[in-house]
Length: 162
Image (cartoon, rainbow, N blue to C red):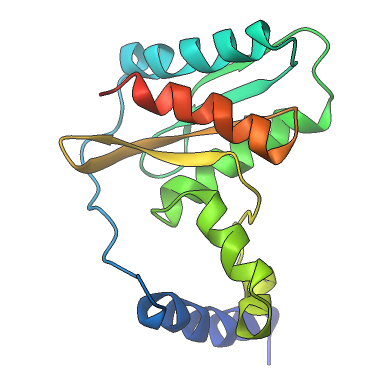
C-alpha cells in the first residue's frame, strides 16, 4: 500500500469523524477569492494588534485554494513563523474551518489522533477562514506568538471584513 493510499485510508474516517461529531455543521461554501485590497484590510488590524502588544508576527492571507494573496512579516519575527503562518492560512481555507477546530479534534485523543495523518492539516490555533456574505473567500494565518496570541491577531483581521 502506497503512502497516498494510506493517507486516503486515514483521511476518509477522519472526515467522517468531523461530520458525525457533536455540534458539527456543514462548512460555509466557497465564494470568489478574496481581492488584494480586502487581503490588505484583513492583515492590517492583525499586524496592528501584534505591534500594540510588542509581538513579532508573520501574517498570511490566502485565497480559497490556499494560494498566497498577501503576506507580511514583522522585523524580528522568528524564521519558522514565515511558513507556519502560510500553512495555518492554507489549512483553514482548504479544510473550511479554523485551525483551532483541528487542534480540538487532535486534543480529544482517540480517533482524533488521525488528524496527524491528514496532509496539510495544521492543528494549531491561528488560522481562520475569511467570510464575505457567508462564503469562504480565503483565510488568514498568523504565527509568531503563542497559539492564543496568534488567534487574537487573526480574529482582529477577520473582523475587518464585517
